[in-house]
Amino acid sequence: MLGICACATFALVWCLADRAALPASRLRPAAGSADGPAGPGSAPSAEAPRSLIEAPGRRLALCVTVCTAGAWLLGGSLLVVCGVPAGVALSWWLGRLESPSQARDREAIARDLPLAAELLAACVFVGRPVDDGLRLVSRAVGGPLGSRLDTVTTRLALGADPLTEWRRATADAQLAPLARTLARTLASGAPLGDALTRLAEDRRRERRTQTQLRARNVGVKAAGPLAACFLPAFMLIGIVPTIAGAFSRLVL
Image (cartoon, rainbow, N blue to C red; front, side, top):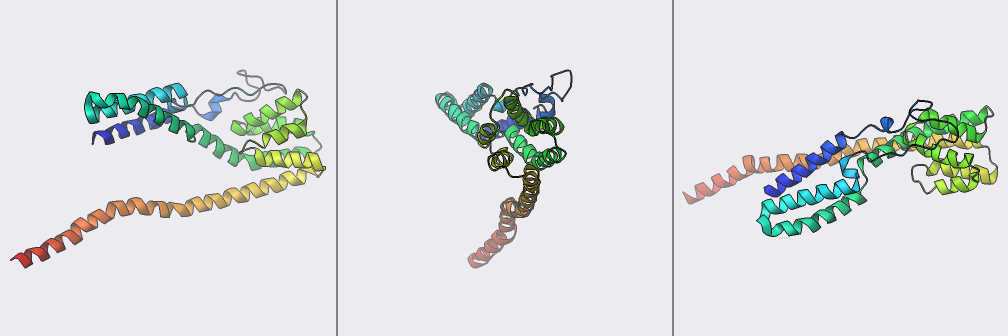
């Protein structure tokens, strides 16, 4: 019971730390605002850790404190020494998981990438250079995708080779579809506008399919908790009294 209380305390601290995080829009100044210039050579602003659990030092202190308190509640002072390595191991394991801000950024980029591709295709169709179109798109989209596009456009403005930069950007899992499209068109000379339009359609279709799969999996995932709640109640109310009544008649 004490261990369950310690785990519940840890989960509560996790949720409170995540809910106290700042929104992503407040961490990046808006384009053209007084908080930060949005010129062609402006670098994206660095984002601080958004929650208590995402800062390595604070996460380590929280995990060690919770594990030590749980060990003390379970076994007294003898198990307190075991709580420190357990907290370090727990902090290392949590650090390898996807943090809440990373999950939010991944969802935001997946949502904004089709729009960014369409906006960049529109800039190409009206004759704007790709570099200028990328700056306009990054300002219009904003958020995590705009920040990553700002990083690439800043390097391009400093004279980096576009093909090399876009091939390097393919290492980013969220930005990889757009980076592969731009690198492929730069290497082959294919029309960029048509490729970006196809990319936007493909990403929207893929996102729609993933949303439908998640919606279908809700019922499957809900079956486990429902069975865990109703099966014991059915056994205690329906099966156990019947068996007890049968045995009592046999004894009598």
